[in-house]
Amino acid sequence: MTAAAAFGPSSRLHVVHDGSAPDADRARDAAEAFLRALGVPVDDPGLEETPRRMVDAYTELLTPRAFDLTTFPNEEGYDELVLARGIPVQSVCEHHMLPFTGVAHVGYLPGERIVGLSKLARVVELFARRPQVQERLTVQVANWLQAQLSPRGVGVVVEAEHLCMTLRGVQAPGTTTITSALQGVLREDPRSRAEFLSLTGRP
Ligand SMILES: Nc1nc2c(ncn2[C@@H]2O[C@H](COP(=O)(O)OP(=O)(O)OP(=O)(O)O)[C@@H](O)[C@H]2O)c(=O)[nH]1
Ligand SMILES: [Zn+2]
Image (cartoon, rainbow, N blue to C red):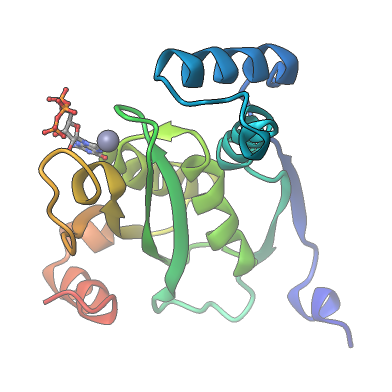
């Protein structure tokens, strides 16, 4: 029996990035002008391709991959926490356009449907690959899962290091920022909340 048959009819929703497509030529010219204005010697042989590389790099950081959100009926009536821990987060802070990176722990208490596990990581990428603040990223992932899955509860914890805070500015290397968004039973019921937070490694 295939996994799909065991789970019964699945549902698929194609999820695509809602941002506008980049204009690579304009971005390359702008990157070159930006570097020149900063006094970077862009005419040196080693830097010739740098504006294009900058555009490619930022395009990648700002473009989440499309995916199919697959959900299955919760035929076993599974009613405990499902938690994906340590999902990589690679995002860009909207204040400085510098990366912030870390991990997300994404969990839910299933209702009538369960979700393909990889989708918990894909939804993190969907909201991470855009100019962000960590608080909004955390809440957007939780809200999206709540809307798509109608689970009994959702919990998202993000732990990240912001290069704008470690490399420059206040220069506080080693600082990580933790944000959380809890909804439904995971917010309201103290025991469920405590279980979720302890499984994510939070006290
Ligand atoms: N709340 C929040 N703040 C962020 C995030 N990413 C960066 N920041 C902060 O955004 C703030 C922007 O503050 P400004 O004073 O306008 O910028 P700045 O002069 O570069 O500030 P410094 O970083 O203190 O040098 C800084 O305090 C950053 O640490 C985030 O995800 N969430
Ligand atoms: Zn920043």
